[in-house]
Image 1: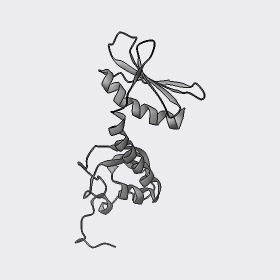
Image 2: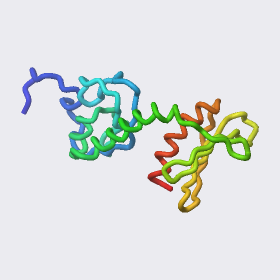
Image 3: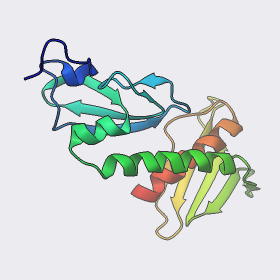
Length: 168
């Protein structure tokens, strides 16, 4: 049993906060380490693992090390974080891509077995949408979100491609 004079370890030291059995429900890249881990309350994190537990109300935003301990999994949190790191590096080169123009006047890329197209929304909202199609099976997916500019849609197309690689 810990003494009353123990070092504060954030929620690790709080009664009623589970230590194991957490599930990661998402990860986010904040762009820079500017958020305090909500579990240990001492580490500044850039790559945030969103953790939930059946016996805890709410979601905790934590760093990789705390996520590992909370899940009792010392592989998958690092894999998730590495994917975010790779995507972050890839955004730099993605912004420099040369898009082609289709016969309909839409910007498009053919890359990694997918066709990515950026187009003006047909609903009159003046926004921009994204479509991603798996070239092998023809399965398409259209963005639900609309973007204010073509440039914003092109930047978001990388996330659409990464999603499509796992789901289409």
